[in-house]
Length: 194
Image (cartoon, rainbow, N blue to C red; front, side, top):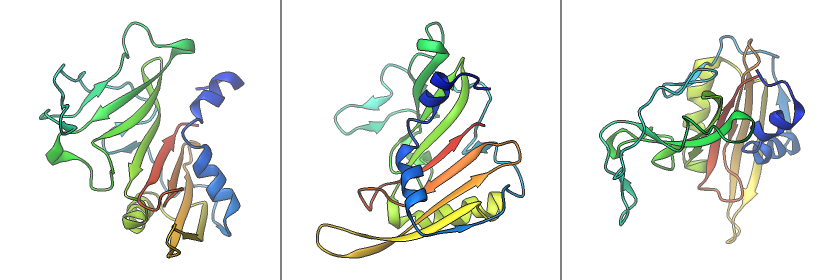
C-alpha cells in the first residue's frame, strides 16, 4: 500500500492525461464499484511480485525492433537497486506471435514498488480498438463508474468519437480506458492499485 504523498504522486505519472480527458468530457456517472475485482490484465497481477524472467541480451532485433524472444520477459532492474523509495519502471516484452491484440507495442510498462506491480500501462491502437477494449473491460468488470464520449478532430478536419471510461474495484484498484489522446491511433489502458 502507498502511504506517503510523494510516493503516491509517482504512481500516477502515467495516468495524468487519461484523468484530464475523463474529467473534461461529457460524462455519465455509474455505480461506485465494479461487480467484481480486476486483479490482473493479460496475466500481470496488481499488488503481486513480477514473476516473469528477465529478457536475454538479444531480446530484440535492433534493426526491425521486433522481439526475438519466445516467451514474455521483462527489461529493467527489479532486483538489487529498486530505485528511489523502492520504485522502478520496467517493460514487459511479448514475442511477436503473442502480443495482446489491443496492444500498440510489443511491450507493456509496469511500475513496481519493492518488486510488486503497482500499475500496468498498455498503449492501444486508439480509436481503432477502443470499442473492443471497452467491451472486454465491461465484460470483466461490469458497468464503469465513469463513462464519457467526446468528439476529436485530426489535422485534416475529420472527426472521431472517443470513449473514455473508469472502473473502480471493490478493493479500490482502478482501471482507466482512454480511447485516444492527442493521436487518434494511440489510446491507453491503465490499471493502478488503490
